[in-house]
Image (tube, rainbow, N blue to C red; front, side, top):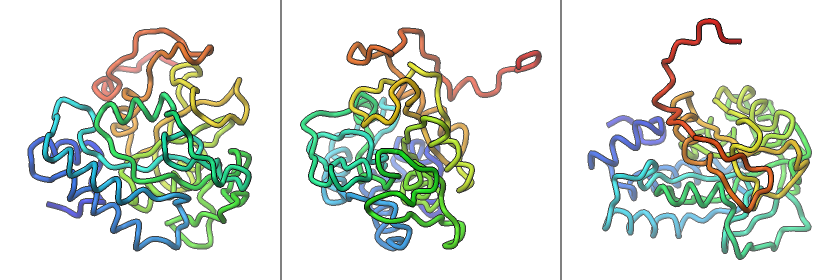
Length: 257
């Protein structure tokens, strides 16, 4: 078995379903990696103890029909997470603990994933280098002299630095795509309205969209399947048939623009 934190999401799901790895083993591996990578400053809030408890509970009663069975992951600190601090990278929200869950993160937990913590970002997503966060700069794992991009810089650095196998960011004018490019990872801004904005701290509501960030295209596609749902709580959510994106990556694109 190769080093756990270097494995793709697809591999981790396969190995957990085949009982070659437990959720607890995977969760502890990413926590250990995160503890040893504090210099990246990717995290604003950690929820490691709860993550291990949830992983143990999953292993005791596993459900291998889920798309993210026992997979640990951290998310951008712009998504409201019930009973877990959500700061949006700001001082004014440093003590804000939501009593509700964003639709996108709820979709993720419904498919078996486990929250590791909340990732650093430019304050209220206003920035492109992750240098405007109240909680300090995020370091690019490629080189300590480089910025990781923004505003989802903590997210891109966490995936690139193998602190989380996948994550989610938000993109207004490039805040997923640009940091993914800066860190050698894959990020997608989905079609506006395909992912609910409910429970996301807004920058520009008419442009903001949640999206997946991962090591590769297939992992990105699988996470997009999970987070993209119609939501009556978001007036801009579009009701359309969602596809199994991860299984449609090899279709012919001849003639398309």
